[in-house]
Image (tube, rainbow, N blue to C red; front, side):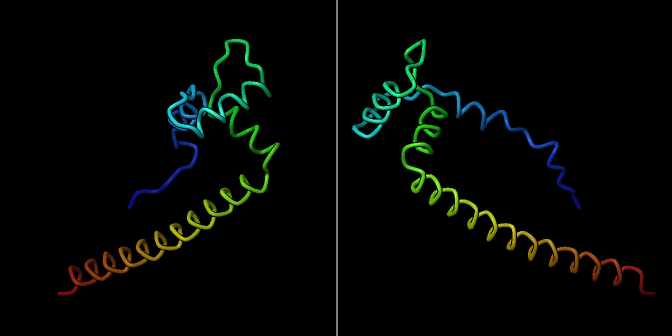
Length: 103
């Protein structure tokens, strides 16, 4: 059975998304990029996902909190499912081991 070591989790993909420049692909993104650009005034003129999240957290914390709570609840539910599956797999493995050890 594999043990999860949280120090080994690679956060590069998450950090990459945070640093990604947001393109004006639709009306909402256009609004957000322009609004955040006015608020943050980045030197290079590029608005990143991280800048949008920070601005939303400052200007619309209820929205960010709701998304964070939903994410936490879904993560907790998934963790409980993972524990149940893990326990079942351990029990099955123990049962197989016991069967193989019997004469």
